[in-house]
Image 1: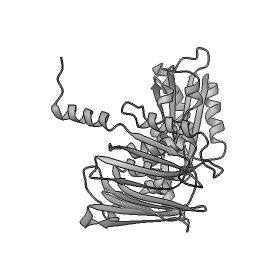
Image 2: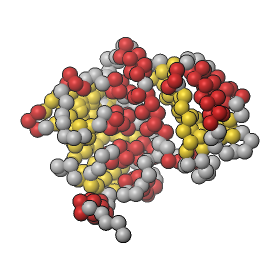
Image 3: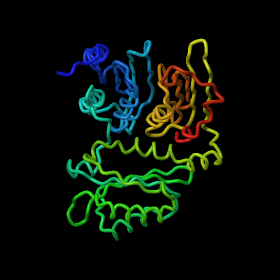
Image 4: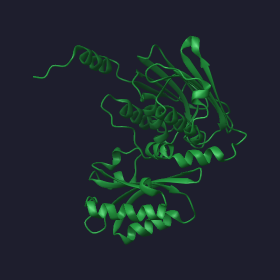
Length: 336
């Protein structure tokens, strides 16, 4: 019988004892539903909670994030539906959050046509290239010509670049496309259409299409695309968007403040960006005023956003802070 190290046993004990507790209450606030999340801290747990809210289609109007020395955290979100009303399906939202934050949960995911088509394997095409009118039409025409059945697809554009995820299977058999020669042919044709060079198209064989969080993966693809970042830097920055970073050295945090026009999934994109930069949010507040948002976050860094306004106190994984010159302006923050 294999024995575990005492520290591993203790960590498992703590995780099970500190099972995430989620509360969705429609009676506390007159204008929004109140969502409270209490859990033992692990890297990425804030992203899991925010992704679950995003997947459910609710809008985060305001809230705060707080934690102790890094072992426990509490998040409070004031959320509404797209029409600005309280969430009607509170039980469904509660179940989604509990499932996403449970100890053995899969990464949070957005239900898709690929998932609805069954739990069998699919082939995922990850595409990155220069955006232009008619591009997706050309991509789908190529796949049709290569006898690929398109199950689901989603695309994002930013800075003159496009990232897309396309789930496909063999047109005749319905099986995933796993023949090496055929995969190379598909990738070669798509790279020519995308004009994206060797990184323009990549094929991934999936055992379960439902395990893919499409928004999260698209965010990563654009974040990794150097041309998207450079073109966004050259573009004129909207006057309604402002990002400020302050080094709070005596407290061991950096403070990030962001102020910009509010939009759906803004909080999700900001948390994705900080997570991809390997920063951990320790404290934060965010609020919206009409169509403006403000966020502030703490990571071993501090991060804030103004209308909507977010403030975050953050630290990098490993406990280091960063100075304003080291962090600002990171190309990935353009994704907000």
